[in-house]
Length: 304
Image (cartoon, rainbow, N blue to C red; front, side, top):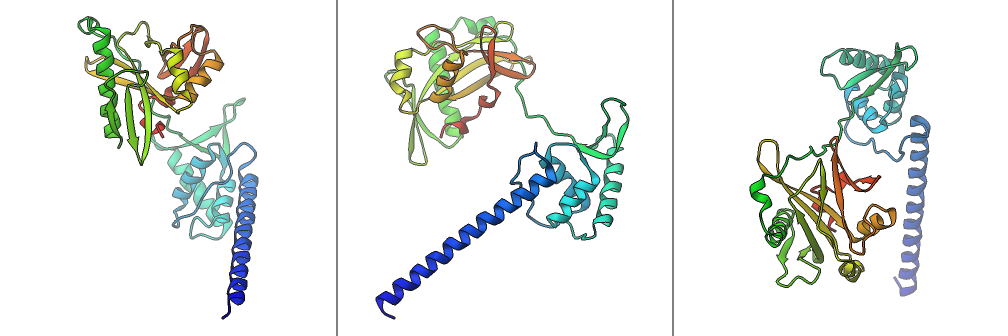
């Protein structure tokens, strides 16, 4: 085979690969269109129903969990047939099996399935079911800090917070060290050949669920903002059983910048973060303006 023949074959192979990619995109688009028709306009499409064959009960659980809405048994059966989730290929047979399973399961005391009621008449809507969605784990409002700990010097609390963060970073697969000189960055951490600058702010005080963290100097924040620095706010407290605990709020520099623009931070020259523990959630707030920051709690995977 000559060089020209070789290059010609390579070109044909590349064109074939491009055709395969285009065909894959078309198939994925058609799949999403099908799911949009099956689930409706308010449900996220692009759901993967692949995997091993399932029982009617398992198929119903997966469909209801991923749809996140109430559904009629005929629609559940339709999706199960469409994506070949079970060994049953007859629509009517599968619909009866799913209806029987859901009806039986919904009567159990600790069932994951619920019958849907009409909001006006309060009567059960025949054939409609939904699944209990487990709420995300949310923080419990902390207890109060014992007076014996409040007497610690601010510098001691700050240093203790830094080493507490280093410990958590190590447990999360980072290599981390505390800086000897504080120049706006307290910790340098590395993971997967990437390095991260981290500043830590620690407090032990709480008043009616409200926690006020030490301020970040604006000039320090602006200096490291473009470097993609991260900020960990540590709240050390004792819970209701008097056991010591730390809550870690992990934010990127872009998070802090966003809080600035949303008016969540105080209007002082320096950056002052305050959080409120309220009904199982945690909010960053400034006067009446607040935003839910529970997502950042103890999530060191956000440093990436």
